[in-house]
Length: 166
Image 1 (cartoon, rainbow, N blue to C red):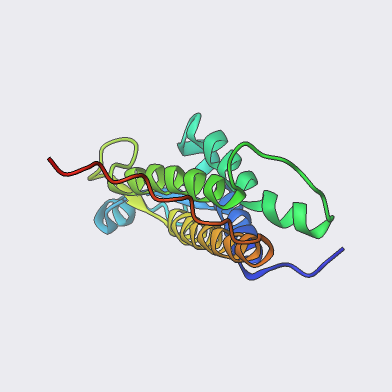
Image 2: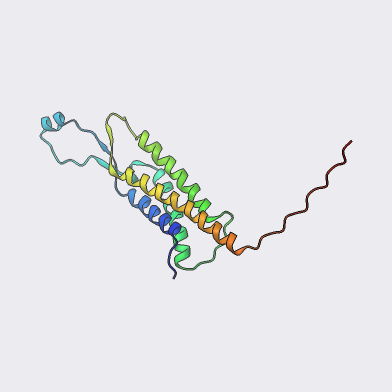
């Protein structure tokens, strides 16, 4: 096992935050104080987690979190895996789509928006997505510097011939 690079560490932490956020409260029902006092009922938990509120979106965000964690797992266990696209690009693409989805759910909560309040879980999801995306960007920078430091410089191709002036 080796020490994690900054990019892989950030992406892994962001992915874990994103997955953990799904178990936290994302939305809650706004009950006016006057109604709660009138009914005499207090202490009712009206919040729902990301798993409950998002429908199939919870599986999408879980997958995004796994994609963000993947580079850290690869580096920790010293695995050599060939991918069709660079790892940093995959992390940035997945977390970018995940962030768009979370921001959409932040702006447009399920149900009547006047009766639904935002809870801390969705904020944790935004933070996790941003941290994972930054980690993906750092992975791209780290991988680019490794390739450019190891690869020999290719010679410049010859210049094309200049057409004669007429």
